[in-house]
Length: 241
Ligand SMILES: Nc1nc2c(c(=O)[nH]1)N(C=O)[C@@H](CNc1ccc(C(=O)N[C@@H](CCC(=O)O)C(=O)O)cc1)CN2
Ligand SMILES: Nc1ncnc2c1ncn2[C@@H]1O[C@H](COP(=O)(O)OP(=O)(O)OP(=O)(O)O)[C@@H](O)[C@H]1O
Image (cartoon, rainbow, N blue to C red; front, side, top):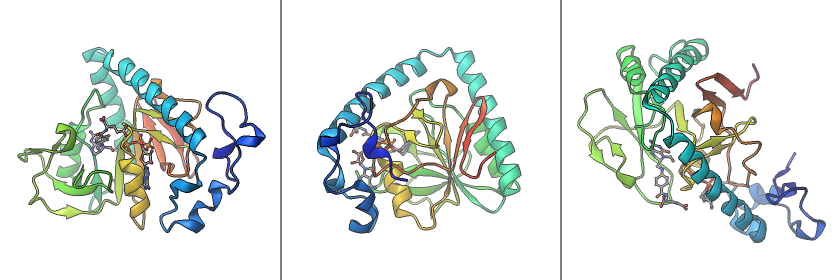
């Protein structure tokens, strides 16, 4: 079912007159990657974008306010849940490529787990903004590797690191909802990347339990993740519990 155009960020269903002449559900038939900005009601898209900007600020302020001890506990709990998920679903993921992330701006720190997985035969990668407003690329990462500053000053593996395509991708969350949708920093990078990869990696959103939203008002470009994981465990799994 296509429901995003019936959601009104200002509350209640969209008034009849605001519905699109052509439904965004047809976007997949218009654009090869399923994304057609012309299929979006511009007024509604503007409302949603404004709401998302405000929610990102609110959620990031709340995350910044966590104590060092709380932050550490979140990282430890999330790492344990992720290790368990990888063990159950991918037999530990040895021989597979998992893209992680280098934590910035108070994101949960999974770097100890990344090093541990590397030691267990998982190939680790990190996302890189190679071209602005384009899909991310992924470069091989190994513990202790000298990093360079990438876009937004995020440390990334150097340009000569091996390019990889992940089988499993971690997506850091600023916000999330119970049906697998993600709010990030607003660059649209993960959505573009998932739209471009075929087959899609198995994607696991990593975030704080307190960052749950009732809905992110999903737009045609938003791609739901396979799993949402927080320090409280699995909050959503596409294949069910
Ligand atoms: N640790 C970490 N690494 C990551 C991500 C992440 O979320 N966390 N990314 C996950 O995708 C990618 C980088 N994401 C980025 C997202 C936004 C902007 C950026 O310049 N944002 C603009 C606002 C854009 C807008 O509002 O339209 C800005 O802040 O000025 C840069 C990089 C790859 N690496
Ligand atoms: N597949 C796509 N093709 C073209 N543009 C896209 C695509 N996906 C997202 N965008 C653009 O990116 C913008 C930001 O998207 P969104 O609000 O979902 O960001 P986000 O998921 O929070 O960011 P990020 O993934 O970088 O953390 C949208 O306005 C949209 O126009």
